[in-house]
Length: 362
Ligand code: PMP
Image 1 (cartoon, rainbow, N blue to C red):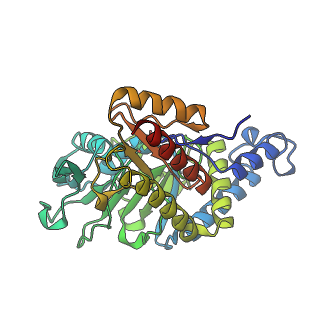
Image 2: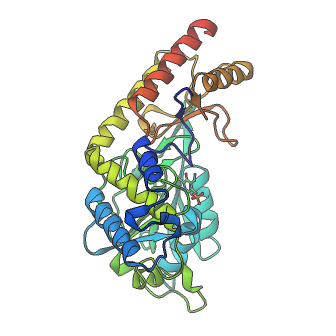
């Protein structure tokens, strides 16, 4: 079978070492004589696993001790609701940046629970998408929190800095960039990310929350939607997605072996540079609609001169083992998602293909 590089936006490519380890463990995990999938979540062996995973995550991200690390279900989408439900005070007021579809969805949910002030929206300048500079933001200054999406997965529009706010907890949906670059957790009140891009398999969601933000929300709040429930139960209030948790653990082991976030970040930068360089030297054959200052290092989107060439590009790339390059249904075009697991070899092969395609049709 030919080697395939999977550029899907999520569920996305996993490191081969992770898949091989999962295969090795499949029938007999940690000498139990059982598959990991069959192990109870209250057993000692599972408890040891979750402790190790939390420790590795804290180490890789540098999570300080006054933050809780939670592993929840419901995807990042459930966090769109859990954040306002838990973080709103009696004034129910939050600031949101609107930079794409995912932040719009977060805004829609938060608006059900309180007042959302849209601080700024992504805008086009000279036909390229940009994020307004902080000097243009309409902050409310007394918001319960400020929410933003550092990387909009669909278009590949990314912040190039962490917003600096005084005394307002910063909440970030890091779903499509978690662990891809170093971050200072102390800058944030709450971070969330679903797993199916950089953390492993779909089904589990990471939440990192500063301890003073774990409050008791309204008494009608369902138990499972309170962060306090999961803090007290150490993410084991009910049956968790055990296998997704296990795969997340293997991904973290792999990241440590690769040299941690700094080493992975260098590799990610090289991959992104190589791809954007291919776009820039194509003299408009491959067109990105993102301003160079806000280009994502995780999702590189671009278009071709017409629909026929786009179809041919997608067809031929797939046949060459470069899979799942079709853009999101809301955006069209091509999108190459190059998360942590994408080796340099995959991007090199894509760039060679792009050059060859352009030679023939450019
Ligand atoms: N936020 C971002 C930035 C995403 O990319 C996605 C999924 N692509 C989501 C939220 C929603 O995640 P989930 O499907 O896990 O709920």
